[in-house]
Amino acid sequence: MGVNPVTGLRSFAVSALAVLMAAGLASAQPPQRITPNFKDADITQVAEAVAAATGKNFIIDPRVRAQVTMLSSTAMTPPAFYEAFLSILQVYGFIAVPAGDVVKILPDANARQFPAVDLPDRVSATSDEMVTQVLDVHNVSAAQLVPMLRPMIAQYGHLAAYPASNILIISDHASNVNRMMRIIQRIDQVMNQDVEIVPLQNASAAEVVRVVNSVYQGAAAEGAMVKVVADDRSNSVLLSGEQSQRLRLRALIAHLDTPLESGGDTRVRYLHYANAEKMAPKLKEQITGITQAAAGAGAPGAQASPLAQAEKNAMVWADPTNNALVITAPPKIMHAVMDIIDKLDIRRPQVLVEAIIAEVDVDKNAELGPPAPS
Image (cartoon, rainbow, N blue to C red; front, side, top):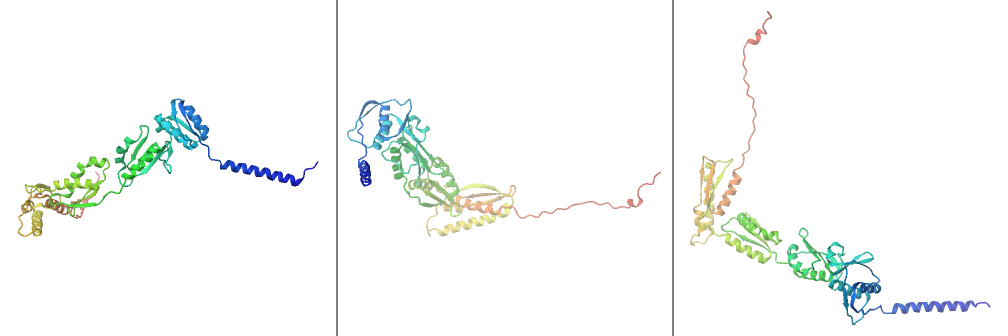
C-alpha cells in the first residue's frame, strides 16, 4: 500500500512544530536553582556539588582539608552558589585561583605566588575571588597611603606603592579591593596647593631654605608633598604644598627671620683677581646707598630698629697683605655685597705673547776656514 505524499508532508510539519514548541518551552523555563545545605561535610564534597551545578572544573590541593557547615533557606542560582563557595574558602583560609579551564583550590598562604584576575574592568563589591588591581593616585602621595591601608589588607594579600608613577598595587579578595578603591577615592581629593611667598627682612633666603630643607628632609623622604624654594632676587621664600604643612613652615621661617642683636656678622673674603684696596671704597659707597634707601623707605620719625642700626654700622676694610676684604654687615647686606664681589672678582681678558730670545756672536773666524792639513 503506498503512502500519500500529502499525508507524509503533514506528519513532518506536525513533528517539526512539536520540536520547536519543546525547544521554546525549554528556553522559557527558569534557570536552575539550588538550595545547598551542608553539615560537617568535607570541603571536597562541597566542591563536587559546586562543580555539578556550575560546570566548573576544580583541582584541589592535598592541604585543603576542612569540615564545612552551610545552611541555606532560599534557593540560589549556580553563579550565586559559586560566590558562596568562594566565601566558604575565605572563611577556612583557602583561595580559588582560575587557571584556564580549571580552578585551583589552594591555601591562602600561597596567594601571592599564583596569578589572580589581573586588572578587571569592574571589581565586584561582593565577590571573594582573588584580584589584582593597579590604581593611579593623582592628588596625594601613594607611598603615604601604604601605612594607612596595610592594616586593612589580609596577611596573604599584597599592597605596594610605586613612587615613580605614584600608583598603588593591590592584590586581595575582590570585595576588599573594592573597599580599598572606595577609601582611596575619598582620600585622593584635590588639596589646597597654593603657592605662598614669604619675604624675608633679616635672613638670607638661600640660607633659610637650606636650613628648612635639612629639617624636613625626613618628611620629604616619606613622600610629603611640600616644596621650599629661594628667590634670591627678592630675598623671599616660596612655599608650595598642603595648607597645614605651609603653616608649619611659615612658623619656622618666621623664627629664622629674626634680627641679630649683635648687629651682624663678619666675613673675610679673599680676592683672586681684583684689588682689595681699590674695591673696598666702592663697596663702602654701595653699603651706604643701600642703608640710605632702606632708611628713606621707613616711616618718618619712627625709631630706628635694631636692623637699621646694624645696617648703619656695616663696614668694609681691605687687607693688602692677603688681598682680602673684611666685611661686617647684617645678612641682607652681606648677601648683596657677596653678590657684587662674585661679579667683580673675575679673571680679566689676557693676551698670550710668545717670544724667542737668541744671542748671536759675530766675528771673522768663519773667514779663515778649517785648519789646513799638516
